[in-house]
Image (cartoon, rainbow, N blue to C red; front, side, top):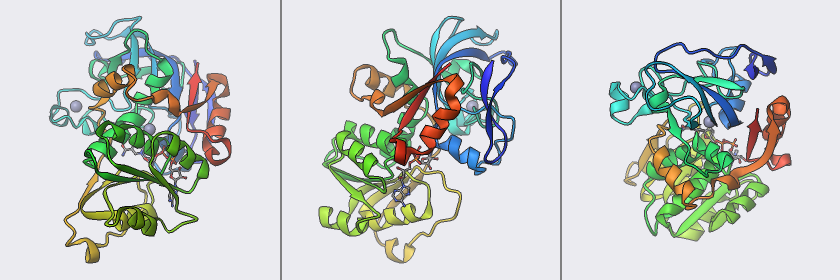
Length: 344
Ligand SMILES: NC(=O)c1ccc[n+]([C@@H]2O[C@H](COP(=O)([O-])OP(=O)(O)OC[C@H]3O[C@@H](n4cnc5c(N)ncnc54)[C@H](O)[C@@H]3O)[C@@H](O)[C@H]2O)c1
Ligand SMILES: [Zn+2]
Ligand SMILES: [Zn+2]
């Protein structure tokens, strides 16, 4: 089969690889119908994720058809249409029993990281019963691919951890797919104001279309001063959806007393915490690796059109052209790419 293989920092190739085989009783082999590329795949290619070693097939998002199952997989059978979660979970360990699938003792974020991933014709899914979801009849497969990672990430790490409430004010720093997924799912709670902050005018325009009440280009304007001018006291929820020290510090300048800073970004460096100012502000800071516990809820929201997941898709490629898909996704400022769909 064809697969996109990580070949060490800066290198990747579309290669011919053997079709994966069942290894454990709970495994399923899934024939991929739609997959996509994540900002985290670009982090891996930059060498930021050393736990992902050369030779690994990338990708942790996708939809497909079950090809075969091991004797321990009882919820799915060959031919079933399934959504693949970016987090594999056994459902039985102490972390899974607490709903913290991201820290599953024999799972977590392993797909396209420490085991071969979804940017291929077939993928092996461990703990298939608890890591796959049935695709409802009539669902838009491409839109569902947004449920593997970005919608649960924006919702769990940004909206739920950030405690967005009706009438509250929200600032989201970073209008990439994750920041936009946070923007879409924050609207479940009817906040009075959602301020999006980014350096890319194109993405800020998308944010306004997706329901942002205000947008700030932080390269051209003083974002903290503008948020204070808009809100008087700062925002109740500040979501960090970039993953660099500057944007975590910006969130600390935007937060109102009593507010919550919800960090979503993957950070590779230490960042300053301004306790000399914030110690008396009654704030909360949260961090989270997505658990994908909200996937069934979000699946219903997508099916009932309460959230338009398909609106995040900008480009489509066949698997033979996945290198072009990476090129397009990697130059998002010029190509205006958000999510690119890849079909084997
Ligand atoms: N916590 C989790 O479980 C989890 C899961 C998935 C992704 N992530 C992380 O979330 C982050 C966002 O992901 P994405 O795919 O949307 O990334 P992305 O790179 O597509 O988007 C980041 C956005 O931030 C903007 N930006 C960059 N520097 C900025 C600055 N100084 N000020 C304001 N805006 C700035 C960029 O223009 C871009 O639009 C990444 O760090 C990613 O690794 C976390
Ligand atoms: Zn991802
Ligand atoms: Zn577990």
